[in-house]
Image 1 (cartoon, one colour):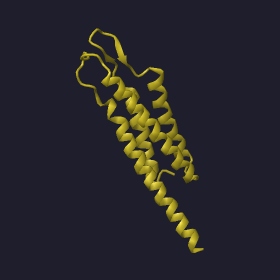
Image 2: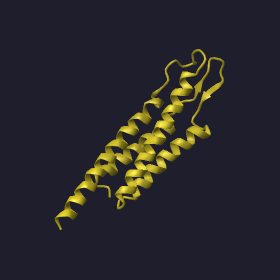
Image 3: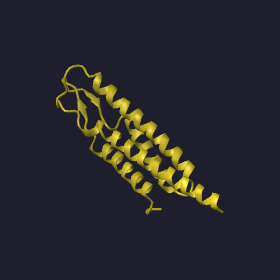
Image 4: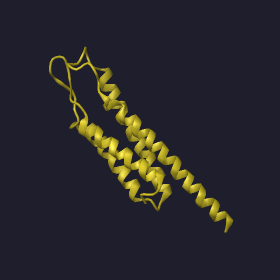
Length: 136
């Protein structure tokens, strides 16, 4: 259901992860060797898992508990992706050709924020449904 706020948060999270994949730079070392690129199996897999979990969570709007669990798994996959980025960038020997690391490291953090906001909205919906069931 598009009119629910958590659906908007999940769509924004999926778009952010898609933007991460599309605009992720290839980080080259000083000697011209590729340090990190978007087509690596680990990075590609984690970004794909994050987008897929967000889409599956959007489509399972009738099962709020499953949506909550899928969002938590998505948050974990984003933390793993963030850890991979930070590890790779901190273990670089010397400088890279381009000294700035890019926005690629920040995008999983923004995605995590939107996933947490979606989980709060799902929890609010679940509490509302439980309170209405108590009144019956």
